[in-house]
Image (tube, rainbow, N blue to C red; front, side):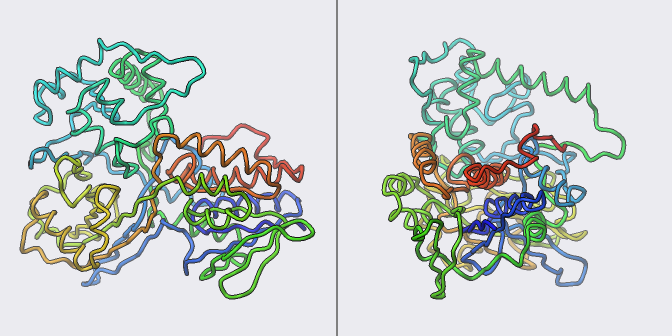
Amino acid sequence: MKRIIIIGGGIAGLGAAYKVTRAASEGHEVEFTLIERDHRLGGKIQTEIVPDPEEKGNFVVDGGPDCFLTEKPACHRIAKLSGVFDAELPTDDSRRKTWILSKGKLHQMPDGVMMFAPTKFVPFATTGLFSWPGKIRMGMDLLIPRKKIVPGELNDETLENFVVRRMGRECLDRLAEPLVGGVHASDPAKMSLAATFPRLLEMEQTYGSLLKAFIAIRRKVEEMRRKYPTKPGEKPRTFFTSFVGGMQHLTDRMAEVAGRERMHTGLSVSSLKSASRGGWRAALSNGSSIDGDAVIIATESWAAEPLIRPLDPDIADALANIPCSSSATISIAFNEKEVGFDLNAFGVLCPLIEDRALMAATYSSTKWPGRAPAGRVLLRGFVGGPHNQEILKRSDEELVQIVLGEFRDILGLNPFAAPLFTRVFRWHLGMPQYTLGHLGRVELIENRSTNIPGLALAGGSYRGVGLPNCIESGERAVSKILGEWSIQLAEDKIEEKRYY
């Protein structure tokens, strides 16, 4: 029996564990042992069910990611395999609207904006989000020639350089940074476009203009919706998807079907070394050790670095050069009658140029049906990111008061609205920054790992921070190890099916 040690019980580690279990179900003699330093599984996916103070029902509070991109199949596939596909929850798009803070005032994001490019003329022309010089500069994208690419060189640049070059500074500051950079909590001046949104670079080369590219995509999407309308009784296909019981419903189910009895929490791996007769030995924080034939490190890059350094200093150096930033989410519940502002929106984005403590706010009980009992409201604020790490030195109570002040000033929250409860979730160095050169660092890590039998790395630090990307990362790590043992799963022999 071959044993794989999995270090890390976030969604990447759970994705790896579940794939090992599926391999065992096909008759292969493989098993896993998973070690997680926290006292819970799921990593940054954490959902708390909070009873209403007046027993009117329950709140569903997501502390980390509250959804995944619907177009990416991994979460759907795992939900289908594990039996929770029917619990998937689309957004309430009848109330879909996003506000963007500009010069102290809220402006609705114009209809037809895709990523950061307007695809409908009238909403773009009439919005107060941009000045007329800014609008004209964005329209000049139609005339600016595509960047010339030197054969053999990687087509990459920062988000800031790309957007300013094609559509101007105002587009970057007022739209692209909060929409694109905010997703990764990254600095646009350092963010590698090839590592985060390579499709934008491809669009420029294919269409010669981002506006032309996104208009073509919008028309294609509209055509597909007309051709394949939602069937009666079928859940609508929305851009984002969650679960009725919160995102932890997925990771809890993954742990159950993979086998919780093989998962150990409240333990960390203090060192890792090759065993004398092949295989690996992991020394644990309680003084014991565990042996295995292979190891998957499914942690943040900064946590993987000290484990890897004795094995391969070059990999460790590359890991050390992947910066990470910290953040926090603050969820606050209210009586609906007390909030005092229009809740008919998904949330608010606060561009860096506005110099606010609040990065963004989500109207959780509007965006997701069932997140709060009737007559209640659940709001969630985001703070931190690479430009404001200092705020995370504040206490939980201070963060709550800061976010409440921002809600009052930006959203128009009634100053007399009394919170029913608050929840603060902190994510220390939880967001990897894909800076320029990231793909080269990842390639080095992957190439050198290939030459170390029985070792693989997984997680959001490498080729995508989204939940589907992390699941696939864990699965690829298992495939690497099984391949070394000449094991191929049936599911790897067929094209991945899309379950939505």
